[in-house]
Image 1 (cartoon, rainbow, N blue to C red):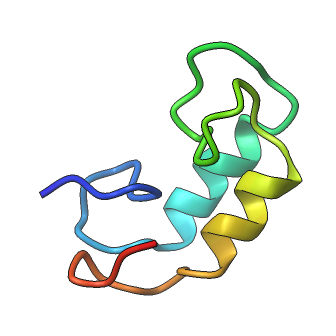
Image 2 (tube, helix red, strand yellow; image 1 turned 180 degrees about the vertical axis):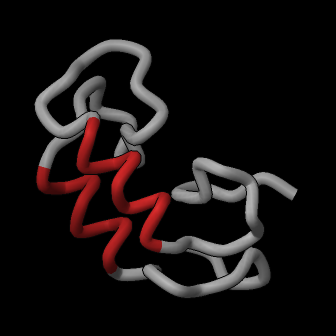
Length: 61
């Protein structure tokens, strides 16, 4: 089951997912880490991710 912020499909949001998001900070256009849907990866996406860090797939945004 896919969930936002789980970039490696391990059914939870872990440090490896955080590293994926951090590697895309500052990029725009077609980024998987764009959680807010505004077309770029920025602090909004980071804060969104951190608010659910460690939660499993039964927990959502």
